[in-house]
Amino acid sequence: MKVVHKLEAAFEENRPVWSFEYFPPKTQQGVINLYDRLERMYKLGPEFIDVTWGAGGTTSDLTLEICRTAQSVYGLETCMHLTCTNMPVDKIDMALREAKDAGIQNILALRGDPPRGAAEWVKCDNGFANAVDLVRYIRKQYDDYFCISVAGYPEGHIDSEDKEQDLHFLKAKVDAGADYIVTQLFYDTELFLRWADQCRAIGINCPILAGIMPIQSYNGFQRMTTLCKTAVPEAIHQKLEPIKDDDQAVKSFGVQLAIDMCNQLRAGGHLGFHFYTLNLEKTTRLILEGLKFVAPVEKLRPLPWNPSKGRRRRDESVRPIFWRNRTRSYIARTEGWDEFPNGRWGDSRSPAYGELDGYGMTLRYGKDACLAQWNHPSSLEDVYATFAQYCLGQVKFLPWSDVPLNLEATLIRDHLARINSQGFLTVNSQPAVNGANSADPNVGWGPKNGYVYQKAYLEFFVSAEALQPLIRSIERDHPSITFYAVNRHGDLKTNTSSDEPNAVTWGVFPGQEIKQPTVVEVVSFMAWKDEAFELWNQWADLYTPGSSSHQVIQEIADSWFLVNMVHNDFQQPMEAIFNVFDQLSLDRETAEPTR
Ligand SMILES: Cc1cc2nc3c(=O)[nH]c(=O)nc-3n(C[C@H](O)[C@H](O)[C@H](O)COP(=O)(O)OP(=O)(O)OC[C@H]3O[C@@H](n4cnc5c(N)ncnc54)[C@H](O)[C@@H]3O)c2cc1C
Ligand SMILES: NC(=O)c1ccc[n+]([C@@H]2O[C@H](COP(=O)([O-])OP(=O)(O)OC[C@H]3O[C@@H](n4cnc5c(N)ncnc54)[C@H](O)[C@@H]3O)[C@@H](O)[C@H]2O)c1
Image (cartoon, rainbow, N blue to C red; front, top):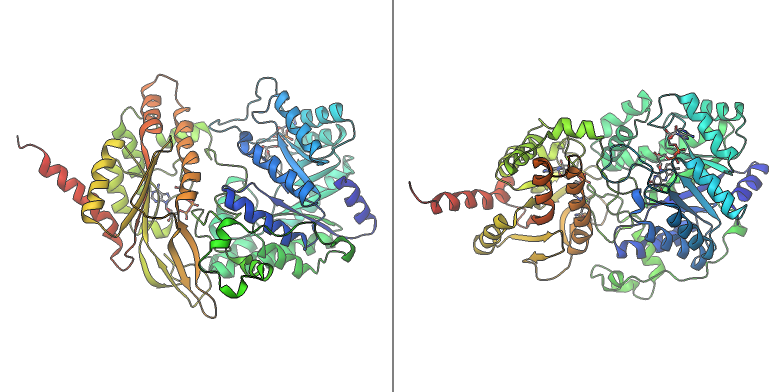
């Protein structure tokens, strides 16, 4: 059924509507768990669900698969996002044909973000330049079979300087055949209501759904609003500042803020809400409960499927035997198990694993900004220096690290800088913590009055030549270290004996089970490595092919290894993980012939 008909019927009755956005999870286990989550969240009564399309079509097959399953197996009204990025007309045709074959009748037509590595958006050969062209094309090819939605920007699109013109581009999309609008996230409800009035004033009369992105974590919120240049009212900053180190308090604030925002929008006459769930469930449920948004009973017919019992979940050792025959109640208990991911390095079984915004990983800054930070390296040593300077706060970002080191990592910044200058190019790290208070300003997380623990880990790129002595040294002298190392072709080396997840962060909180938000495991490592190496390619593409900068970066991309290394003895001092590198330098010095 067309979403627009559902929206019109609800608005006719003055009834609010809500919908949920998901993104394709990074791992197969995450996909299976997302299906369970779709089932549970269906009971919250979304009018429809939608699934994002990876930037540059990177996850398009999975987007199609999830939409197909949600629509035709699970019977959920599903809207598929479709972008023009890297999509010549024949690929667009194929995606639309497959969507239609799966019974999908709703498409969110977008231009898309710049393709990987590109500073600016460029139209691909035989493709479309703007979302309006895609809307026109879908109408021309499929007449009124599809219900088409388009994106609206209450603060104007980030690329467009003229906000008024931006509004007219939106009208052009509607005039070309779009049926309703879904907006970009925003936090200023007054601004949204003014913008909605402007839309009506220039003759945009179709339904508008307000995009609501609940604040899930302080860092995530900061990162997202900086990247999207979102206007954040001062009152929100003021309320967040004193609680920013208490993850539970931030989440609760995020829930209340979303409730208040939706109520303000309703008071302003607005009835349509689109939740960016980030594949998380609990926050969305709490917001709907707070709003007293309850699905009409007739909508909650039983679904024609059973929750999938993922391979992992069947084997899960922590699953109590009491739940063996009561899968549903066990699943209900897991609703909040990934609510405290400590950074994106989370548990790959989580549907929310590994994504900041659901559109995929690209260089976050334009070409000029990147070159201003990374210059034109002509040797490997130049690259080492850039990484070391990042650790010392002199370079603002790297392809893998879009914001400066956080407080936690600054505790070990000198050690990090030292190993980076030696060619161990770090992209992620964590110091050891042995029972710090959960409100500790440097390493605390989770609800207050708890205690948190961490095993030290490092993730870095290293040349094949330097990897060998490192592995020898670990095997000889460092029994507490476990590692995975992989090159871009997937050649994996490890000293672990099973592919069980290794818990590297856990917390003990009053009146709760132990929380274990962060694990290191081979499945997620292998899923991550494709992106990790792809970012080197994007860096190389900033330079003219054949130039020395291009060659240096490409050499790393093609032949180096990505290593994850965990020091399992978390009771050792913070710097213990660095001993292995110091020992290597010592070995090198003693091996060098005396002159
Ligand atoms: C609800 C929502 C969902 C999204 N989902 C995804 C997703 O799944 N995958 C993804 O990669 N991205 C997604 N995005 C991000 C989106 O792709 C980017 O914001 C993208 O930069 C713009 O897409 P658009 O469809 O709004 O583009 P357009 O409407 O084509 O606008 C793009 C730019 O071109 C300008 N413009 C528009 N028409 C014209 C014209 N006729 N002539 C000249 N300039 C014009 C606009 O002012 C704007 O600056 C989503 C955004 C929103 C709000
Ligand atoms: N293994 C995976 O599956 C996976 C998935 C996504 C991201 N990651 C890794 O996590 C990194 C950061 O992810 P996040 O932003 O979600 O987590 P985060 O922001 O929590 O970062 C983790 C820690 O690493 C530190 N850090 C960041 N850049 C560093 C660098 N260059 N050298 C040393 N330490 C650094 C941060 O300050 C922070 O303390 C990514 O760049 C990537 O390396 C891994």
